[in-house]
Image (cartoon, rainbow, N blue to C red; front, side, top):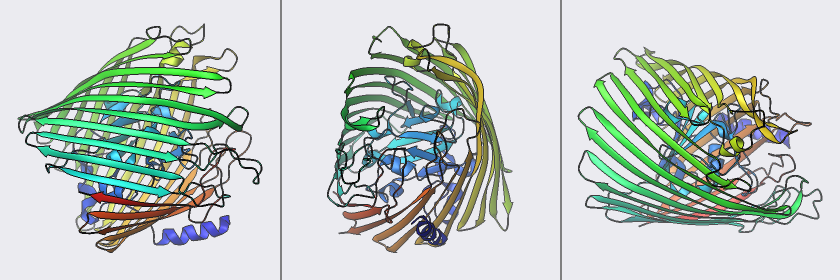
Length: 625
């Protein structure tokens, strides 16, 4: 079966690939695409010394029926462990050998966390794909601009904005199966519905989004007896999003945004690795106030946010409740001194408090104030330089200094074709969580922040008008990890040094306006890491996007995940082949879409002893009015 899969995958990749990143635009648009995350301001990709992967609203729509984490798992260099399992399975974000707490998650440019958890991780399962406008992924240490957690990468998720019409709306619904490779039935176990209403009336714009998802059919833990399957574990999620903006004039705009997420899922006992009736029930509330003020040579941005997350784990051992609060602001000013020179000056503040078990509100809290400066120089002869520094002033461990320098150079070669060389040295930090601070070992007076640095070097080459290649080498090193003592059941600072290194390569080719191909390969060596991470050293994929007709789009995607070592045994490699079709009718007012995932019904394990999804279908309808 594996040989057949690899053969099919090789054939698929020989004529297959995708538009999954910022390098996957058509022809000359490749290097002119505007991205935000790398510099916190709009800038052409040509002038950035990083590889930024971007999914536009069109590319997200072309992946209807998948979850956010499934799509992120297809981006080169990202491993979302748990994205192919039961919908209630925890999703760990691994970028370049780092864990979830080492990757920053942004929503509309604001760093989001969950202060009620041990590692302060934000749960990507809370977000619905139908409410997302675009996604940018920036690899490497980026704490200068984004603070704690931006050590291995940044995932910047932009929610949908209002249209310029007075009223516009969409209704999207889909039905799909949710079975393992050994399952025998194809039934409607997954259902989702989404409403979106938005528009602009005078100087006011508005957006209302409502979403509901449900899933059943799979047990979290795999049964050892195929004839006696475990009880299915259900998953439910409801999302509500409200956004209102007021445009005073062309230079001043402010607005508010609020969201509410209700989250429920059943899961099994991971300690005994057995079927169980455990479940989690929680909710999340987020509020954001934003202001944009433009003036002659610059722009001032203010983001003030508040997040409250609470939930309860109901297990055979008892009920464990937790609640976390986080609020703060990020104010920054982008000033253009000259046409080629600009700089950002900002101040970010964050306050966290939590209640969990013996931890009461006010008994442990943390806050930080971070002034930062970032400079951008874009010459007229090809040289670009980004550099910055941030002072992290924390109530637990004091002051921590972070910095970065990132030069790049554009050459004109092969008759107006562009070659960009880039390099960077960046440092980052991860502040200890509230839970870790409260549970530090008795002999530990202060938990220091984890320190990271990343060295990168690479190139991006526009070989032809329709052929683009990029490759980047990285080396990442981490020290002062917050570690868990299995003897005292407390946390301490591990002064050891751990590292990962590797390279990422991607090729994008559009032989025809209607046809786009891409291929990517990632190698990561985790040998220097302390944890026994079950992560692949080798991962590659390819995709073909083809517009059969102006109203019909099809794609095929193949992704290979190599053997994953760590612990007492290794997990075997596997490959997944997916197929997608999208067809518009009635002048694009109605879109019909469908997909088949794991088309070859590969039987594999993503997490030891846990169930993974086999061949499944999803059929859907989108109505625009």
